Length: 50
Figure 1 (tube, rainbow, N blue to C red):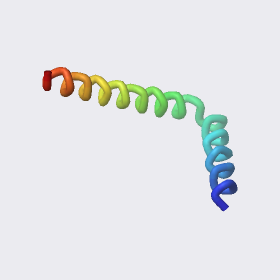
Figure 2 (cartoon, rainbow, N blue to C red):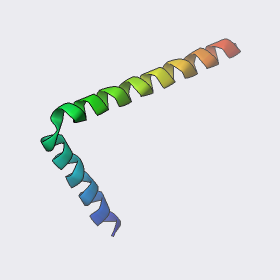
Figure 3 (cartoon, rainbow, N blue to C red):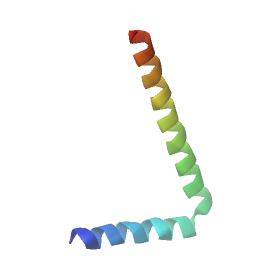
Figure 4 (cartoon, one colour):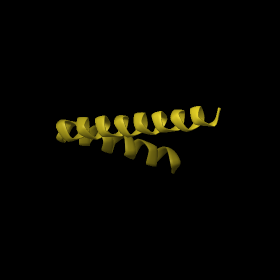
C-alpha cells in the first residue's frame, strides 16, 4: 500500500509539472527562498549565542 501511494504521489507531481510548469517553477523557487531564509535566520541565532 505504501509503495502504491508513493507511486501515485510521484505520478501526481509529474502530471502537475507537465500541466503547469510555470506554477511549478514558482513553487520550487518560493520553497527554496523560504528554506534559505530559515537557514540564514538559524545561522544568525546561533551566531548571536557565541
